Amino acid sequence: MNQTQLEYFISVAELGSFTKAAKRHYVSQTAITQQIQCLEDTLNTKLFNRKRRPVSLTDEGAAFLVDAKAILERMDSAVSKIAIMSGSDGGTLKLGYTRGYEYSRLSKTLRNFRHEHPNAFITCRRCNCGEMAQALLNEDLDIIFTWDHDEIIEYEGLEWKKVEESPLDVVIYNTHPFVNRTQLKRNDLKEEELLYLAPSGSYLMDAYLQRYIDAGFQPKVIFHTDDIDSILMMVAAEEGISVMPQYITRKINGLEGIHCIPLVGTGENASVVAVWRTDSDSKVLQAFIDNI
Image (cartoon, helix red, strand yellow):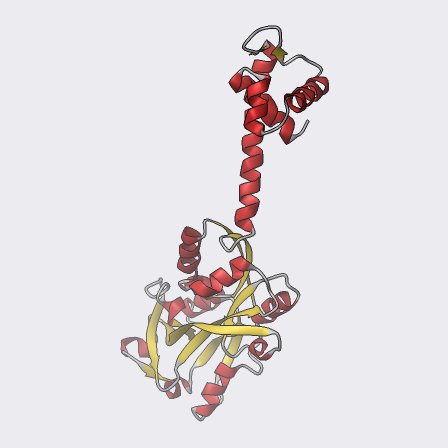
C-alpha cells in the first residue's frame, strides 16, 4: 500500500469512474486499474462493484475510504510539520541559564518567542556557569544565559550579546541595623558577614568579589553557594546578609524576614549575556537570537 494507491482509490470513489480518476491524475485508465488491483490484493478484498455504472464502493470499500482519507491527512500533516521545522519557524532549541536567572524576565522572553514561533520547542536547563559552558561546547546546549564575567565569552568559536543589566540590592533580615536605610554603598558592608552568591558554585576568581577589594577591604564571606533559596533562608534566619541582582530581589522583596536595599555606586550592577556557537546552523536559534 502506498500514497499513490490511496489517492487513486479516493478519486475513483469520489468520481465513480476509473476514466474520470485517470483524467484527474493525468495518467492512463490502465494505470489507475492496476494500482487499485494492487491495493485490493494487499487488503485481500474487493473495494469496488465494477459491474455497476457509476462504479460504487463495496461495504469494505466504504469502510476503507474513511481510513484512506485519514491516512492521507496524517501524511500531509507530517510533511507540513517537517517543512515548517526545516524553516526558521520550527525546531528544537536547547537553552541553559545560570541559577537565579529563573527570577528574571527570561520566562516572558520565552513566552513571547513561542507566540511568534508556535512550532518551535524550547527545552530549559538550569545549572552553574561551569556546567553550562561545557554543555555549550559539547553541543548539548544551543545557547546559554550566563554572567558577563564568565570566561567562556573569551573562547574562540562563540558569540555573545548582553541581554540584561540589573542594579544590585543588599538583602538583609528585617531586624538588621540597615533596615531603615534607603540605599547602601559597598563600603558599608565592610563589617558584615556575607552569604555570597557565586554563580559558578565557587567564589574563587570571581569578578564580583574584586569589587569589595576595590572598595578597600576583604569581604567577610562566611558561606558561598549558587543556590539562591538557601541564601535567602539563611538571611531570614539572621545568619548574614547578601548581595543580589534586582531581577532576583524584585520577586523576593517582602518575603518573611527579608528586606532589600539598593546598592549604589559606579558600576554596581550585574550583567547577563547570551552565548552561542558560531558554527551552529540552527534556524530556530538564529530566530531566537534576533528576538532577545
